[in-house]
Length: 242
Image 1 (tube, rainbow, N blue to C red):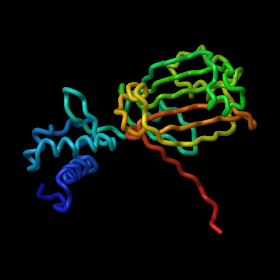
Image 2 (image 1 turned 135 degrees about the vertical axis):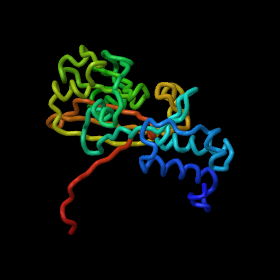
Image 3 (image 1 turned 90 degrees about the vertical axis):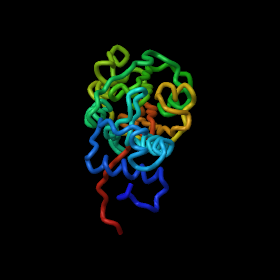
Image 4 (image 1 turned 30 degrees about the vertical axis):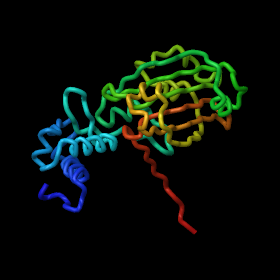
């Protein structure tokens, strides 16, 4: 590592070595990079040091490990708007990944307290509900749950959401005029960790979103995604500061 910063700890120097090759384009997305056994001797460090560097770069979303195959440069993460609502299938496709999904649940369901409060309904009121796991190149990107005010977006429970997203149907059949959303972070429980294919200590971001029509809440969504598999971004035009 003669060209790397000698002041860095060995594992950090390996990270810097790999990161610079990714960011320079020398190792583009989906490139299979040298193995830990090959890179260690080439850089004059141990396999354990390279393993730690790879693990941290995977947590940061720059690498992805395929069991029994090797380590690859990850593709860019889907980006979700901070001040806009976007179709997750389009966001995943825009990052060069193939969108897919698993329909986990679709039907009428008693609304939990959080959803009922957002929809200004009595807890336990029976409402249309969907739970979808969105995938990018087969990897879990987001667990999406939606609760709807009964009567909103006719045909919601009859759609095939393996062919189109719930967003696409709501954009066509609904008439939302405003949105409220908040973002927080959690550590997944065992069931969520299995579903999203992440370790229990992997932070996940939760977007809580309510859409409204003429001031009345029509949908409430809870979107959960591994923090290292996507990013949130937004841009606003601000007035002159006074």
